[in-house]
Length: 65
Image (cartoon, rainbow, N blue to C red; front, side, top):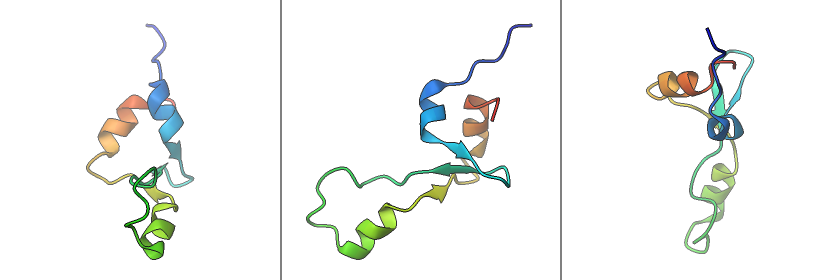
């Protein structure tokens, strides 16, 4: 059987944590920042984990971790 390839786009966006969850960046911090308050922008700069509803899809794209 051939090796399973990793989706390179997903590999650049997600990283695995020690507990097996996937870490990701938040959206909405690229442009149109003037109308967003400082508290919101600060929160958007922090990373978060992938939601449980999307875990199956991310795991499929990153078979090797």
